[in-house]
Image (cartoon, rainbow, N blue to C red; front, side, top):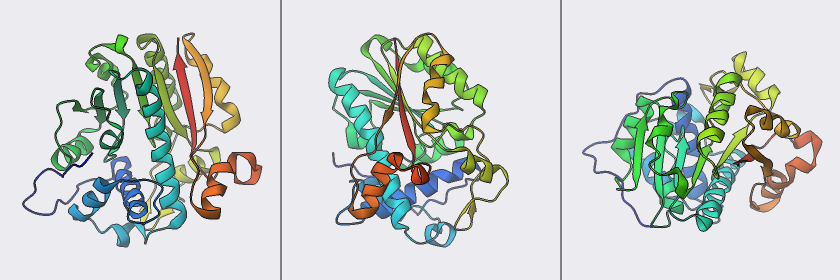
Length: 281
């Protein structure tokens, strides 16, 4: 799908800090990866967004990092494929992307029939609305994901719903994560949720203010989940039918193989996103 950004008269300066500012780091990594001729993720919109924003990406976030860029590309591709797999079976489904920031998944996976809801904090939603192309099947909901009224915006859950939470839940409190899972299980029968999680040592460093990317201090993370703890998600609600790992796609070179198979090697297990699919009865 070929898309252009919303028209701008000048470069856009994002007014973000705290957790919303992290959306610029994920965007930077996707764009850096997408610029490569052998990129694992085709994302021309990410490149155009970086070129449009008046933000010192390299000065603030550091130069392109081969591990971060490829890992982010693979993580986004992993979520894309999960959405595509679900909508292949239920082409009229609704995709609800929680805390989406400036992700451009809609334009990468749209099948011409699905509906897309992007739930984002007001400051991120405003930026998303200013920059990304308008589309009649793409709607932005400017509110916190913990305000569960976003579930009311799903017009016909019987057509199928897939909820994505990429790079989000770790910033919420454990009780909030559990509440979101329970609400989805209660109200979205036949639906699924795809999420990623971080290990405890990473979340601990963020709470101590010790984890930095370039000059950006990563905001405190509160929820963590080790890969072997996935089964605990069943306890959030009786209607959770399945919880399983989603493996990252094959990457590029030795680094890509390490990222893909890190779950097999205990010492590397915590160095790549742990992606999980939760299916509702």
